[in-house]
Structures are given as C-alpha cells and as structure tokens.
Image (cartoon, rainbow, N blue to C red; front, side, top):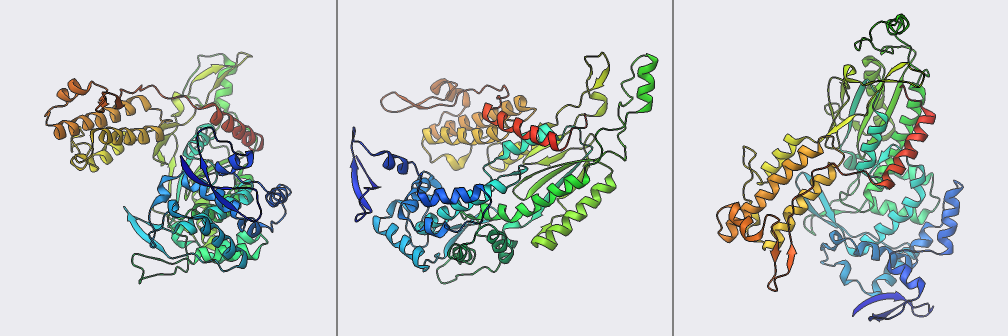
Length: 538
C-alpha cells in the first residue's frame, strides 16, 4: 500500500490521506489529477483568450488553486533529478498537505518569496538547486507561460521549452538545406547570464495583463544564490542556471530574434526559379552527349536568392543561396539586432561562414555537409528531359571527436583501444553493465540520424562493451575479457542469487534506425508550410 494526497471533493477538507489498496476505486477526477493534469473553468477561460489572441488576466488565480499546485507536484515527482536537497535539506518527497495550503495562501495574498538557491558546479556550468516549494511554483509558472507563448514560437525554434528537440531541428536541416550555397553557423554568447530583466518583463507583459503574476516573475529573476547560506548573491541580469522556468523565459526572449529572421527571410527571398544555364540549354537542344560538368542552372543568378534558418537554444544555422558578400552583411545585421534590441552578443569567433559544397559545418554535434555538384544524380522527367536532383544534406557523427571524449573519460587509452574504467570498480556487476549501456544508449540515440550511423555505432559499441568487460575482469580478477565473456556469455548476462538474469549487454544492430511516424508527420507538415511560402530552388 502507499499514501497519496488526493482531493476528496469536499469543500471543507481540501486533501485527505487515502490508502490505495489493490482493487480500490478512484473517481475520474482523482485519476486525472494523479497523472498531473488539471482542468477548471478558469483554465478554460485562459485557453479561450489564448486562441483569439487576447491578453490573459487570470494566471495568478489559477496558480493560487492548491489542486493546480498538486498537479505540478505530481509532474515534478516523476522526474528523479528534482529530488536533490536544497539549502533547507527539504525534498519533494517530504512535503505535507500543509505545504500546499501555505504556498496557495502566499500566492493569493502576494507574499510568496523564492528562497535563495544553492549552487553546484558541473564541468564549466553553474547549476542551482532550489527548495521543493519553489520548484512547484516554478513548474506552475512554466506550465501557464508555456500555454500562453507556445503558439507564437517560430516553427524554426527548437529546444528551450518549445516542445521540440534536437531531432526536429536536424530533420528540418535535412529537408530544407539541400540546395544551399552557403552555411552560416552562429552562436549567441553567454545567453543565460546576460538576459536583460526589463526587456524580458516587457515582452511577457505584451501577452500577460496580470500584475501579481508579473511580480512573481520579478521575484524569480531576482532570486539569490550561494554556495554558503551567509554568502547570498542577488543577480541584476541573467537567468538562474538549472531553474525549471529559465529555458522557457530564454526562449520567450530570443523569440524576438526568430521573428526578425522570419521578416529577413521574406525580404531576402527573390525570384521564383534560378535562370537556366545557356550552355546547358544549347547542349540539350543539340542532342550532343550529356556533359555532367555543365550546370543546368546559374549558381550566381543575381535575380534569385533564398534564405533558410533553424535555431536550437542559443545556436543557429542559416543556409543561403546568395553571394558571400551578402552573407557577411547578414552576419553583421544579426550582430547589430541582437545587441540593439536584446543586449545579446553574437560570438564572432564561433560564427562561421562556409561554402556548403566544399566545407562542412558543425551543428548540434553533427558534421553537416552538402553533396558536391558533380555528384548530383541526373534523372529523366516524365517528358524525357534530363534534370539534376539536389540530394539532402549529409549529417555525419564526428567519430574521432566522440572517441576522444571516451578517451578523456577513461573508457579508452590514447590509441583509442578499450580500457578498464577504475572509477567504476566499486559498483556492483549489475550497476557496471547498466552504466555502460546507459552511456552507449545516450550517444547512439543522439546520433541516430547520422549518415554514417553503421560504422559509428559499431565503433562506439565495441569500445564501450570491451571497456565494460575489462572493468568486470579487473573487479572479478578474471584478467582478460575473453574469460569474462566465457563466464557471463558474450551478452554479459548478470544473474542474481536465484539465477535470474537482472541485466545484460547484448550486441546491437548497427543498421540505421527508422524515423518514427509521428516525427515524419510533423516534418512533412513543416516542409509543406515552408514550401508554400518559399518555393524550392530545384
């Protein structure tokens, strides 16, 4: 049996402890809430205002409902990362019925304050850990702001609370960057620490007419942080690193750049079709042997220009059919807009312009390059005429770079050969195998779209699996991986005392995984909408 706080439907008693036993029944409303969902007349009013584009006014009222706070708690509880201890040593598991009352009342009377957060360091990043009460309030604010601003986010924006992922960004590149001449890889420098609070509040106020809710955002932005309770620092700019609400606020902020790029694309686009190459036309009419070196269309047509754009977080990639001079001008315009309107700095050292068919560009960990002109396949139309087909860009996994990271993390030696990881010796056999599998799964999932997935996945699988075997060999004094495979089979099947297999490390299928149907559907709709607005050059 387990204890849960569930609303009873009585007005005088908000929550009661209900013992859930096997076969016990709950009302539909109770089951709905247990899944972290929330629906009230106030929320329906909010959604109706969002649909017609009106300013919303009832956010603070919804937030002051304890049932809404409870639904946010349920969603947070499903995330194990949020169970870390704050400065007060409180956790989400330790909250009582009284806490929901208290938070609800303080939001209602405007006295709620965010507690100073503790600071932890992870590599070069500074992350913060907040109190469980603050987590719930942040999640409540995030849920409501996402409802308000999600419809206005650009289709070219991915990550940071946009309900899109790296995969959707990469697939957009696959579909729209095939015929580009230039690639501009851009990076916005130190986005989170430099966001201007006044500008952010003004952007939110355009959609939200609710001063108590705006005040809560102010309080969140000015929340102190410290490594020690007596050394609290209060920021004047920037967003809390690791805060639940911060990614969404950052996306609301940079959405202005997306809007500017949308207008720039419309201004930049010129012409409906590239001018045909006279030499190509002469060759076709004469009936002479087809020369693959002759281009069908003029690549330097001054009357034809195209621009495509995709952003993930503070990184963006622009594809252009234009001259390099126009690309340099665009880069300078981006720099000026970011500083003049958002007080953000374009990192010129990491903003690189490359010729797409001759050089590669890196984005989201992938190496992106386009097929050289001479390798474009030639096919016949229905009328018998020959056309040159522009293939999709190639997204390659940087095998050497990933192997170097594995070397840095003690999974391989300097020559790229697998080695034991001494840091994992203290773990149980089950935990060792599961740890290695989680590392491999994380890497291969991220690079599931790679053109070289087969060779890449086999290389990574070999390194990690044999490193796992060497680690087990050292722990169990078996000396060689062959003896480990002989004892635990080649799939590294680990059994418990009852002889039951608790985990294993099977050999993977190196075939490139298929794209899920739901993602394909999303991307097809996305491509269709983009094609109507900006026709392809093919």
